[in-house]
Length: 110
Length: 219
Image (cartoon, each protein chain N blue to C red):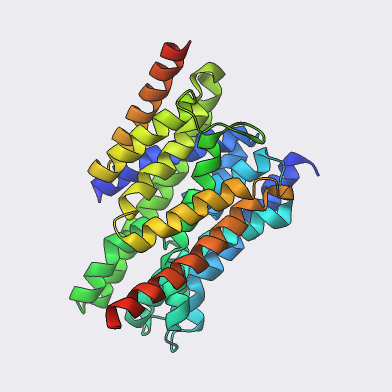
């Protein structure tokens, strides 16, 4: 499929699904309580999905090529950034330190 | 309000950079931001498009991401019951992580529905416009900055910045560890299904871990 077509299809489909999730209890089930099991499961969605999206970009240096060694600059930079984000909660600082660490380790490792 | 707008600006720029890796034009980037209006979903979608994942997998992955809005929607619903449906639709459209964080306390503490709704509407609209503008800025920046700078790495960094502060209890650490191991272990799955499978496995493990924990506490 043409890339632009995929982009538009994704935009419309994901836009509609997002709107439906946002509307759900506000409009459709406003008289219903959320089932407790669902509430507990939803609580874990952010950690589970953010991890699943972020980790491959850090540990795979090429498609299907895993590098968990200290010679992977992205891994070093990600660990630095994670420690800082845990401690300080600043998005801008985390990204600045992460990028600087990446460039520095690339330069050091040649 | 101003610190919150400053907070989403870097996220918007990152999202614009990510849109470029999927080959999105400036107009397509703008349309995504105005219609989807969710950084996590837009980044996941553009990364999956860049990886060549099929439409169904992209939409399904973003759907799981969007499930967190059910939590916000349920928390706000009791406060919006008396509103007519047109306004509820508008507020629902503007419901984001940031708008929820900014308004839920107001709704819980004050009965002034008119004031609370105006505040929600104002902050939501401001976030929507800021989001659209900053993603376009990111998309433009991405095409100017040379590839050797690896600007695309700001995408995982941004997610790390959102993720790390959430890992403050043992169950969240379990969810993180399971998701990380599963997404690497399942990498060989076709069509980038590893993301959604790892996410779902981690969510189930989180629910089980929580149950085990509360079980030992009681016993």
